[in-house]
Amino acid sequence: MSAQIHADADFDLDAAWRLHPQVAVRPEPFGALLYHFGTRQLSFLKDRRLLAVVQELADCPSAAEACRVAGVEPATLARYRAALARLAHSHMIART
Amino acid sequence: MAFSSEAPPRPVQAGRLVDHFQYGLDAPICLTWELTYACNLACVHCLSSSGRRNPRELTTDECKAVIDELERMQVFYVNIGGGEPTVRPDFWELVDYATAHRVGVKFSTNGVRITPEIARRLAASDYVDVQLSLDGATAEVNDAVRGAGSYATVLRAMENLAAAGMRGFKISVVATRHNIGQLDAFKALADRYDAQLRLTRLRPSGRGADVWDELHPTAEQQRQLYDWLVANGDQVLTGDSFFHLSAYGEALPGLNLCGAGRVVCLIDPVGDVYACPFAIHDTFLAGNVRDVGGFTRVWRESELFRELRQPQTGGACTKCSAFDACRGGCMAAKFFTGLPLDGPDPECVQGHAEALLVGGDRAASAPRPSQDHSHRGPVRGQPVLLGLPARRESRPARMCDESPLA
Ligand code: SF4
Ligand code: SF4
Image 1 (cartoon, rainbow over the protein chains, first blue to last red):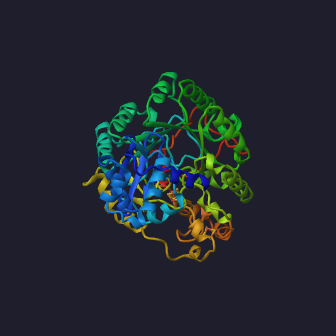
Image 2: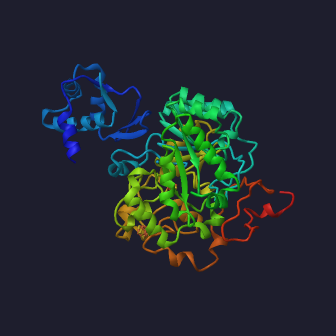
Image 3: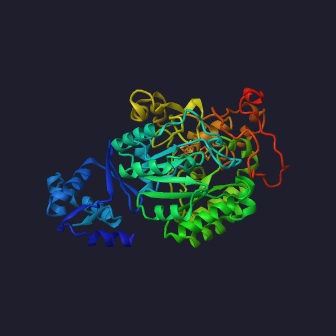
């Protein structure tokens, strides 16, 4: 648990991020599935908005901007930040 | 995810995936593809009753067309099995074709073709993973199930892979009455080769039906297995093998749901698509990849898969306090032991299946697999089960198998 909090606090919303090049994304009715060919880990995005954020990452100068473009309300930003932190932790997304 | 031949990697957030998975996905995440029914061995518990090649097996071009479809559907990886898939002359060509199309491959093998040269090739690829089958931590226990010499063969394959620098390959063990006492030894063996241990459940599928009564773990051993998994589960892969054990208390890591037709399916060597690699029976046959619309259409539109994607609402298990964790266990295990699909698993840890399993001639009335490619004559190194007479009489798969002309 403490590792998780630590990861959240560490996640830099102002940095530029992108999907790890070895990760494939497959949209599904509930959101999307992610598969990392290097770690052979499967993960999932639990809503379509989060999928949109992840898809915007590569075109945005920062993760915060990707959230804005994808329509994340400021009130829910913390939740998306936590989700991004988790993805960074499992190497699904990486700093550019 | 069934996950066999079928086991998906452990989802990062296991618990909540289940709720989405029960309604099915646009493409499977645990697709097993058995490339051939041919095999050099004759393991007593073979889930696909393999041995002889089927003349109607998919051609190289047909296999490539399936891979093209998997790429379009974004199936991340396939679990290739058989039979012994590496005996197909085009095996490496198909592996290369799949990885070039961003379809990862994990293949199951008894190790017969894993030479030092092949091991080096495998170690060099990020997109190929190897799973070696081993059913005893000693030659005595392993060879009784898989045949004389098979332990030596698989150990040589492990040596070759480790020497080539391949890390994290899988050692896959079917848990039986004779090897439950060897769990620590399996783990040590995997650690020695920098490999990952995978434990799966013996299901009464294929020839497994003939030996299930003698080989499936006793109730006491199931508890031992559960305790071992609670202590070590985060270091071993189990796919969807043991969620029926979570009725003991704690949920175990792995997929806690029968994914048949939802996230799991099988493409057999002739292109037939079944709900699960452990359910090779007409009841679970959804279509064939050679049909119009191919695999995609079978996966997305078959009547059978639609039915399997409904949550279970009735049956004895839904009234059980453990249902949320156990979900009634494995559909294939119930089916091939002749139990109702909405009732308890034959290995229900609360003992609710015991009364159903005795009584009546269950062995005679339980459904048989729809096909049998077992070797007809003797095989080199033929397995001899521990504690049993050397020559076993097995039940004929179909009436015509008794005919000398069949
Ligand atoms: S039938 Fe059994 S082996 Fe097949 S997916 Fe369901 S639980 Fe897994
Ligand atoms: S009765 Fe059904 S749900 Fe309950 S423990 Fe047994 S198999 Fe699982």
